Figure 1 (cartoon, rainbow, N blue to C red):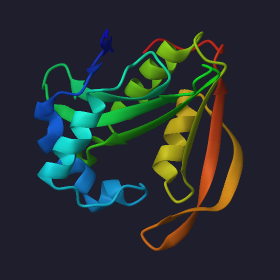
Figure 2: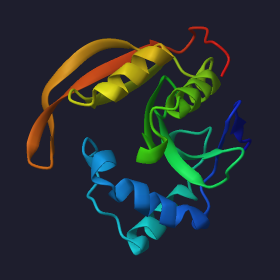
Figure 3: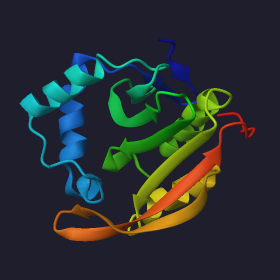
Figure 4: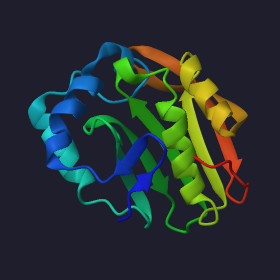
Length: 178
């Protein structure tokens, strides 16, 4: 696998050394609030999650989870998932970033780089977010996604049946450099 390198970031395959950082930021209530995973995530569970990520393939069908780190300060700061359909027609993306590194443009930079990599290989790129997660909705719009729908009471998260916003972007659309 070739890493994706941007001006400030490197998106790479996970390593076993990433488990502690994954546990830390995914256990943060502010990060987990709009996610479907159970939180907190202890060290053993994080090690199991990372072991699963090590078996994934970035360019084939199925899910691949990129580890996100900064050039100047290596170490896991977030992750970005790409789920490709078997026929290659669609990819679904989603991102999670450590709370102390949010609102610095890292999510925009990482998402733009991955979307750019997907262009020409899929017909559509889609994403969704909890309607209450306005920061994620803004991120998706900033990267170039258009909102095309809303699922009512789509999923139960922490006792709340939340609506989800649905976003998409055609895979042949040209993108700005990351």
